Amino acid sequence: MTSIHQTLYRERLRSAKEAVALIPSGAKVAMPIAAGQPPGILAALAEQARTHAVENIKLHYLLCTGVAGASVFDFDLRHRIIPISYFHGGVERALDKRRLAEALPAVDLVPCHFSQVPRSLVEHVGVDTLIATVAPMDADGNFSLGASTDYALTVSRKPGIRLILEVNANMPYVRGDCMIPVSSVTALVEHDVGLPILPAAPRNEVDDAIGATVAGLVEDGDCLQMGIGALPDAVCSRLLQHRHIGIHTEMMTTGLANLIKAGVVDNSRKQTHVGRSIFTFALGDQALYDFLNNNPDIEAHPVDYVNNPFVISRNDRAVSVNATMQIDLNGACNSEFVNGRQFSATGGQVDFVRGAYASRGGRSIIACHSTAAKGTLSRIVPTLAGPVTTPRNDTHIVVTEYGWANLKGKSVAERAKALIGLAHPNFREELDRAAHAAGLYTPG
Image 1 (cartoon, rainbow, N blue to C red):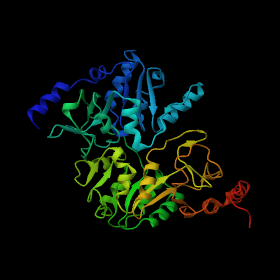
Image 2 (cartoon, rainbow, N blue to C red):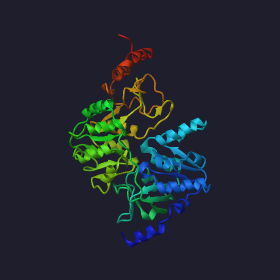
Image 3 (cartoon, one colour):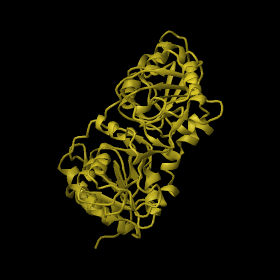
Image 4 (cartoon, one colour):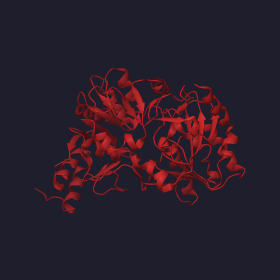
């Protein structure tokens, strides 16, 4: 680290209160996903709002954690700090429940594929401020975005951006295209605090049955993308006997890291970033963050690169595994609405559905339980109860605990019959009648 870098660092160092005082009322602020959300800066910004020092701050993000929920998204601050989500989680669902009880609008959401979020923020929204957690400065005067490169790197490179970083010794130093030079920073805040932990989702026998089926569709040498939750975790647990697996994924999970540690992953058969596991954000346990830290075999890159379907397709035999909430009899998927309200969002599902199928020998897998609400509702339905996340034209392989079906090349009638075969037996007759009534096929 040169004396110039040290001087620049000292010149930009501020208290959290001093740093957020640089954010004016009416600012359009972006913050990264999950681990990249800076607790000290958020607490100070919330305090500024409580004292009416700032008004009308619009905060744009995906998947916020409880840190943001307990500070800037305190219900009492809703008129001064306005959440604008690209992906809902537990915090937004809790806010929506409170808002509904008081006859207020739900948390606003921008529908957008994950790969397009950087352009949305820079070009369409026009954010003017980025707040983010970073690893300590390296010898070259750069800060690694660590577990949350996502859209933050692209936003950080917008000309004129106000860039306020929280330096946290617990953020893993990750290599790749994920560095912010100290010379471009507006203000620095030092705050060492633990990163958010995502505990393993509880699995049941249905998850394990689906995981076994999906794992059976994965071959040695495939290049994997896994989503979040119990189903992808169940798949990872069934891949321990595989070899020469590659990783090109939006989210690095504890399950994927365990496959790397076990020698299942070596990235030797990829066509891009050979020998390296590629991701854009990470969320998991402390062991995952420790594993990422200064690991030469793992790289983080911005989401408009990682999730670009063309980039995904450059690796042969790309396999994407994602979950959904509903599939209609045509094969269209609703992966974001529950009970008529926003539950999550599109995220990167369609990015990888398209990218994986476009790769040579690639497969896109959509998995779900056959039922919801303790078995009282079928997830295979005549009509979706929410927006189409993955269109029917894009859906490839569907898996439930009752097996799998390849929808490519199948007619509407053939798709309906195949999907009814994946539904819970208690609902098959009802679905069959619905298919007949819709004219998808005739009895006999």
